[in-house]
Image (cartoon, rainbow, N blue to C red; front, top):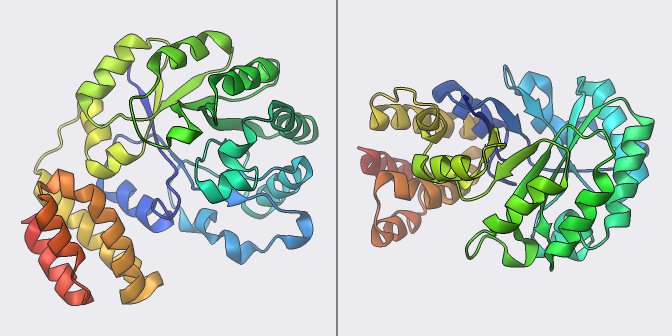
Length: 309
Protein backbone atom coordinates (compact mmCIF):
# COMPACT_ATOMS: atom_id res chain seq x y z
CA UNK A 1 0.00 0.00 0.00
CA UNK A 2 1.41 3.39 -1.03
CA UNK A 3 1.26 5.74 1.98
CA UNK A 4 -0.40 9.14 1.86
CA UNK A 5 1.95 11.85 3.05
CA UNK A 6 1.09 15.24 4.53
CA UNK A 7 3.33 18.25 5.06
CA UNK A 8 2.91 19.24 8.71
CA UNK A 9 1.88 22.81 9.57
CA UNK A 10 4.91 24.43 11.24
CA UNK A 11 4.05 27.93 12.40
CA UNK A 12 6.35 30.58 10.93
CA UNK A 13 8.10 28.04 8.67
CA UNK A 14 5.76 26.28 6.24
CA UNK A 15 4.22 29.46 4.85
CA UNK A 16 2.85 29.67 1.32
CA UNK A 17 6.30 30.64 -0.02
CA UNK A 18 7.92 27.54 1.47
CA UNK A 19 5.02 25.26 0.47
CA UNK A 20 4.93 26.45 -3.14
CA UNK A 21 8.69 26.18 -3.56
CA UNK A 22 8.77 22.74 -1.95
CA UNK A 23 5.98 21.57 -4.25
CA UNK A 24 7.84 22.80 -7.35
CA UNK A 25 11.07 20.98 -6.49
CA UNK A 26 10.11 17.83 -4.58
CA UNK A 27 7.50 15.11 -4.97
CA UNK A 28 5.94 12.50 -2.73
CA UNK A 29 3.72 14.91 -0.75
CA UNK A 30 0.00 14.31 -1.26
CA UNK A 31 -1.52 16.97 1.01
CA UNK A 32 -0.42 20.19 2.67
CA UNK A 33 -1.77 21.58 5.93
CA UNK A 34 -1.36 25.32 6.50
CA UNK A 35 -0.10 26.63 9.87
CA UNK A 36 -2.88 27.66 12.23
CA UNK A 37 -4.84 30.87 11.86
CA UNK A 38 -7.16 32.34 14.50
CA UNK A 39 -10.84 31.52 14.64
CA UNK A 40 -12.56 34.92 14.71
CA UNK A 41 -16.05 36.39 14.86
CA UNK A 42 -17.48 37.50 11.52
CA UNK A 43 -16.95 41.20 12.18
CA UNK A 44 -13.18 40.80 12.52
CA UNK A 45 -12.56 38.88 9.31
CA UNK A 46 -10.06 40.64 7.04
CA UNK A 47 -9.27 38.79 3.79
CA UNK A 48 -5.82 40.43 3.45
CA UNK A 49 -4.75 38.84 6.74
CA UNK A 50 -5.55 35.39 5.33
CA UNK A 51 -3.40 35.64 2.20
CA UNK A 52 -1.31 32.64 3.25
CA UNK A 53 -4.21 30.35 2.36
CA UNK A 54 -5.69 32.32 -0.55
CA UNK A 55 -6.05 29.88 -3.49
CA UNK A 56 -4.21 32.19 -5.87
CA UNK A 57 -1.20 31.99 -3.54
CA UNK A 58 -1.29 28.19 -3.36
CA UNK A 59 -1.31 27.11 -6.98
CA UNK A 60 -1.87 23.36 -7.48
CA UNK A 61 -1.53 22.59 -3.77
CA UNK A 62 -4.11 20.31 -2.10
CA UNK A 63 -4.26 22.57 0.98
CA UNK A 64 -6.24 22.22 4.20
CA UNK A 65 -6.44 25.36 6.39
CA UNK A 66 -5.93 24.90 10.12
CA UNK A 67 -7.78 26.94 12.74
CA UNK A 68 -7.04 27.61 16.39
CA UNK A 69 -9.30 29.10 19.06
CA UNK A 70 -11.60 28.17 21.92
CA UNK A 71 -15.01 29.66 21.04
CA UNK A 72 -17.34 27.36 19.07
CA UNK A 73 -19.20 30.26 17.44
CA UNK A 74 -15.92 31.81 16.25
CA UNK A 75 -14.99 28.60 14.47
CA UNK A 76 -18.34 28.49 12.71
CA UNK A 77 -18.05 32.14 11.61
CA UNK A 78 -14.50 31.66 10.35
CA UNK A 79 -15.14 28.45 8.43
CA UNK A 80 -18.19 29.94 6.74
CA UNK A 81 -16.23 33.04 5.74
CA UNK A 82 -13.29 31.06 4.42
CA UNK A 83 -15.70 28.99 2.36
CA UNK A 84 -17.38 32.10 0.97
CA UNK A 85 -14.14 33.96 0.30
CA UNK A 86 -11.85 31.14 -0.83
CA UNK A 87 -14.02 28.10 -1.48
CA UNK A 88 -12.49 25.80 1.16
CA UNK A 89 -14.58 22.86 2.33
CA UNK A 90 -11.98 20.97 4.41
CA UNK A 91 -10.70 22.34 7.70
CA UNK A 92 -8.49 21.20 10.57
CA UNK A 93 -8.79 22.26 14.21
CA UNK A 94 -5.52 22.47 16.18
CA UNK A 95 -5.76 21.17 19.74
CA UNK A 96 -2.15 19.95 19.77
CA UNK A 97 0.14 23.01 19.71
CA UNK A 98 2.23 22.85 22.95
CA UNK A 99 3.60 26.43 22.82
CA UNK A 100 3.35 28.03 26.28
CA UNK A 101 1.65 31.28 25.14
CA UNK A 102 -0.92 29.24 23.21
CA UNK A 103 -1.58 26.84 26.10
CA UNK A 104 -1.90 29.71 28.63
CA UNK A 105 -4.81 31.10 26.63
CA UNK A 106 -6.58 27.71 26.55
CA UNK A 107 -5.90 27.22 22.87
CA UNK A 108 -4.09 24.44 21.05
CA UNK A 109 -3.04 21.75 23.52
CA UNK A 110 -4.40 23.96 26.29
CA UNK A 111 -7.87 22.70 25.30
CA UNK A 112 -7.07 19.04 25.89
CA UNK A 113 -7.74 19.09 29.66
CA UNK A 114 -11.25 20.33 28.73
CA UNK A 115 -12.91 17.58 26.65
CA UNK A 116 -16.29 19.26 27.09
CA UNK A 117 -15.00 22.38 25.32
CA UNK A 118 -13.41 20.33 22.54
CA UNK A 119 -16.69 18.46 22.04
CA UNK A 120 -18.63 21.74 22.03
CA UNK A 121 -16.44 23.08 19.22
CA UNK A 122 -16.82 19.92 17.14
CA UNK A 123 -20.56 19.72 17.82
CA UNK A 124 -21.09 23.34 16.79
CA UNK A 125 -19.14 22.98 13.54
CA UNK A 126 -20.61 19.64 12.48
CA UNK A 127 -24.19 20.66 13.28
CA UNK A 128 -24.08 24.13 11.70
CA UNK A 129 -21.83 23.70 8.66
CA UNK A 130 -21.52 21.11 5.86
CA UNK A 131 -17.72 21.16 5.86
CA UNK A 132 -15.33 18.24 6.32
CA UNK A 133 -13.56 18.54 9.66
CA UNK A 134 -10.44 16.99 11.17
CA UNK A 135 -8.48 17.51 14.41
CA UNK A 136 -4.76 17.64 15.12
CA UNK A 137 -4.02 16.58 18.69
CA UNK A 138 -1.55 15.05 21.12
CA UNK A 139 -2.04 12.35 23.75
CA UNK A 140 -2.95 15.09 26.20
CA UNK A 141 -1.45 18.18 27.78
CA UNK A 142 -0.56 16.78 31.23
CA UNK A 143 -2.05 13.28 31.09
CA UNK A 144 -2.99 10.58 28.58
CA UNK A 145 -6.43 10.48 30.24
CA UNK A 146 -7.16 13.81 28.57
CA UNK A 147 -6.66 12.30 25.12
CA UNK A 148 -8.67 9.20 26.01
CA UNK A 149 -11.60 11.35 27.15
CA UNK A 150 -11.53 13.37 23.93
CA UNK A 151 -11.44 10.27 21.71
CA UNK A 152 -14.41 8.81 23.58
CA UNK A 153 -16.45 12.01 23.25
CA UNK A 154 -15.70 12.45 19.54
CA UNK A 155 -16.36 8.90 18.36
CA UNK A 156 -19.90 9.62 17.20
CA UNK A 157 -19.08 12.82 15.30
CA UNK A 158 -18.45 12.75 11.52
CA UNK A 159 -14.77 13.67 11.55
CA UNK A 160 -12.68 13.17 8.43
CA UNK A 161 -9.59 12.05 10.37
CA UNK A 162 -7.49 12.67 13.48
CA UNK A 163 -3.83 13.66 13.36
CA UNK A 164 -2.17 12.34 16.52
CA UNK A 165 1.32 13.20 17.79
CA UNK A 166 2.35 10.56 20.38
CA UNK A 167 3.60 12.92 23.09
CA UNK A 168 2.03 15.03 25.82
CA UNK A 169 2.01 18.79 25.39
CA UNK A 170 4.20 19.14 28.50
CA UNK A 171 6.89 17.11 26.74
CA UNK A 172 7.06 19.45 23.73
CA UNK A 173 9.31 17.53 21.30
CA UNK A 174 11.60 15.97 23.89
CA UNK A 175 12.07 12.36 24.93
CA UNK A 176 10.79 9.19 23.34
CA UNK A 177 7.28 9.25 21.84
CA UNK A 178 4.71 7.07 23.65
CA UNK A 179 4.12 4.56 20.87
CA UNK A 180 2.37 2.10 23.21
CA UNK A 181 -0.21 4.74 24.06
CA UNK A 182 -0.58 5.72 20.40
CA UNK A 183 -1.26 2.07 19.63
CA UNK A 184 -3.95 2.04 22.32
CA UNK A 185 -5.47 5.28 20.93
CA UNK A 186 -5.80 3.59 17.53
CA UNK A 187 -8.19 1.11 19.14
CA UNK A 188 -10.22 3.80 20.94
CA UNK A 189 -11.44 5.67 17.88
CA UNK A 190 -13.42 4.75 14.80
CA UNK A 191 -11.88 7.64 12.87
CA UNK A 192 -8.99 7.39 10.45
CA UNK A 193 -5.69 8.31 12.10
CA UNK A 194 -2.83 10.24 10.54
CA UNK A 195 0.43 9.60 12.41
CA UNK A 196 2.61 12.62 13.19
CA UNK A 197 5.97 12.76 14.98
CA UNK A 198 9.60 11.64 14.74
CA UNK A 199 9.59 10.26 11.20
CA UNK A 200 13.09 11.42 10.23
CA UNK A 201 14.27 8.57 8.00
CA UNK A 202 12.90 5.84 5.75
CA UNK A 203 13.89 3.37 8.49
CA UNK A 204 11.75 5.30 11.01
CA UNK A 205 8.80 5.10 8.64
CA UNK A 206 9.27 1.40 7.89
CA UNK A 207 9.48 0.50 11.57
CA UNK A 208 6.40 2.52 12.51
CA UNK A 209 4.31 1.41 9.51
CA UNK A 210 5.06 -2.20 10.41
CA UNK A 211 3.98 -1.57 14.00
CA UNK A 212 0.83 0.38 13.04
CA UNK A 213 -0.48 -1.40 9.92
CA UNK A 214 -3.86 0.37 10.06
CA UNK A 215 -2.20 3.78 9.64
CA UNK A 216 -2.02 4.67 5.97
CA UNK A 217 -1.35 8.42 6.22
CA UNK A 218 1.72 10.09 7.69
CA UNK A 219 2.45 13.72 8.53
CA UNK A 220 6.05 14.82 8.09
CA UNK A 221 7.34 18.03 9.63
CA UNK A 222 10.83 18.30 11.05
CA UNK A 223 11.84 15.15 9.15
CA UNK A 224 10.95 16.72 5.81
CA UNK A 225 12.80 19.93 6.69
CA UNK A 226 15.88 17.93 7.62
CA UNK A 227 15.63 15.94 4.39
CA UNK A 228 13.38 17.41 1.65
CA UNK A 229 13.65 14.11 -0.25
CA UNK A 230 12.11 12.06 2.57
CA UNK A 231 8.62 11.76 1.07
CA UNK A 232 10.09 10.61 -2.25
CA UNK A 233 12.36 8.13 -0.50
CA UNK A 234 9.49 6.69 1.56
CA UNK A 235 7.59 6.09 -1.68
CA UNK A 236 10.63 4.49 -3.32
CA UNK A 237 11.07 7.20 -5.94
CA UNK A 238 14.38 7.96 -7.67
CA UNK A 239 15.72 11.18 -6.12
CA UNK A 240 18.56 11.77 -8.60
CA UNK A 241 21.32 14.26 -7.75
CA UNK A 242 20.36 15.44 -4.27
CA UNK A 243 22.78 18.36 -3.98
CA UNK A 244 21.92 19.74 -7.39
CA UNK A 245 18.20 19.55 -6.65
CA UNK A 246 18.60 21.00 -3.16
CA UNK A 247 20.59 23.98 -4.41
CA UNK A 248 17.99 24.70 -7.09
CA UNK A 249 15.28 24.59 -4.41
CA UNK A 250 17.31 26.78 -2.05
CA UNK A 251 17.98 29.42 -4.70
CA UNK A 252 14.33 29.46 -5.75
CA UNK A 253 13.18 29.73 -2.12
CA UNK A 254 15.57 32.62 -1.45
CA UNK A 255 14.33 34.55 -4.47
CA UNK A 256 10.70 33.92 -3.56
CA UNK A 257 11.21 35.07 0.03
CA UNK A 258 12.98 38.23 -1.14
CA UNK A 259 9.95 39.33 -3.12
CA UNK A 260 7.74 39.45 -0.03
CA UNK A 261 10.08 39.79 2.96
CA UNK A 262 13.10 41.78 1.80
CA UNK A 263 16.67 41.00 2.77
CA UNK A 264 16.34 41.21 6.55
CA UNK A 265 13.18 39.08 6.69
CA UNK A 266 14.61 36.55 4.25
CA UNK A 267 17.84 36.30 6.23
CA UNK A 268 15.93 35.60 9.45
CA UNK A 269 13.77 32.97 7.75
CA UNK A 270 16.74 31.22 6.12
CA UNK A 271 18.70 31.14 9.36
CA UNK A 272 15.78 29.38 11.04
CA UNK A 273 15.61 26.86 8.20
CA UNK A 274 19.35 26.15 8.35
CA UNK A 275 18.89 24.62 11.79
CA UNK A 276 17.12 21.86 9.83
CA UNK A 277 19.12 21.95 6.58
CA UNK A 278 22.41 21.58 8.47
CA UNK A 279 21.91 17.86 9.10
CA UNK A 280 21.10 17.13 5.47
CA UNK A 281 24.10 19.16 4.28
CA UNK A 282 26.42 17.49 6.80
CA UNK A 283 27.33 20.65 8.71
CA UNK A 284 29.00 20.31 12.08
CA UNK A 285 27.76 22.44 14.96
CA UNK A 286 30.76 24.72 14.51
CA UNK A 287 30.05 25.11 10.78
CA UNK A 288 26.41 25.90 11.48
CA UNK A 289 27.27 28.44 14.17
CA UNK A 290 29.73 30.10 11.83
CA UNK A 291 27.03 30.39 9.18
CA UNK A 292 24.43 31.73 11.62
CA UNK A 293 26.81 34.45 12.85
CA UNK A 294 26.90 36.04 9.38
CA UNK A 295 24.71 39.16 9.47
CA UNK A 296 25.22 40.50 5.95
CA UNK A 297 22.59 39.06 3.59
CA UNK A 298 24.77 38.70 0.50
CA UNK A 299 27.62 37.18 2.51
CA UNK A 300 25.19 34.73 4.10
CA UNK A 301 23.84 33.62 0.72
CA UNK A 302 27.33 33.21 -0.69
CA UNK A 303 28.51 31.16 2.27
CA UNK A 304 25.38 29.01 2.45
CA UNK A 305 25.55 28.24 -1.29
CA UNK A 306 29.22 27.32 -0.87
CA UNK A 307 28.26 24.98 1.98
CA UNK A 308 25.74 23.37 -0.35
CA UNK A 309 28.43 22.69 -2.88
